[in-house]
Image (cartoon, rainbow, N blue to C red; front, side, top):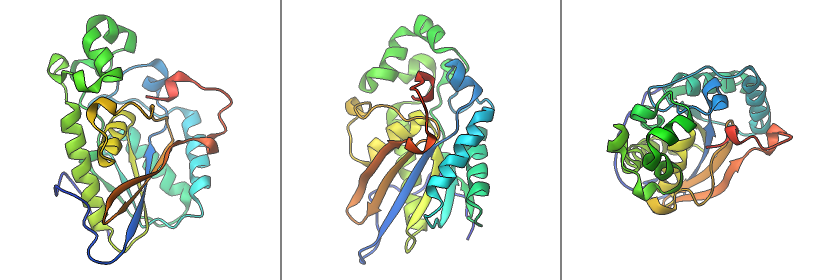
Length: 238
């Protein structure tokens, strides 16, 4: 089955009366040129994956090679599509792949394409709130999207993915650092002021969530051990 999903149902997970569980593997896209340069990409900005990112996606695929996946879902933004397509090719299995607009990155308005330091100078309040105090973030200042809006569409999209995969065990969802941080924590019932408490998500990382009739449950956050990174590069994580 190959389906294309958009923002859909609202509400809690409904897996029917039987005791079922679906495991969701959330993957942040590979590192890009703008990630390396510390630029905001957002929903409308984009830049190519770095050459080294393809090697990291291979390592990700190797770490997942023993897991049977029913479906791969990806944000339609090119950096996520490219990550999903290359991951699918490296898994060497005929896994259906669908694009889901609800898991796209934040619309960051005026900040998109700007260097972090330039945003800090031009929009200091928005810069600090977006990074450190999401409950104080005023998206209107940069003509972008609020945390509430992203969390709403992200949950709707993931709920619909879960509904579409009843009876299956594992799916991959390829998305973006800021949207996944807000969206996954929202699935787990974290309030907006505490969205950053777990820390950020790294490029080509895996975060695992189980979905059952009782809701969503965290299994692993920001797993990167398979990447064998020798040092912590701050441009890897948002």
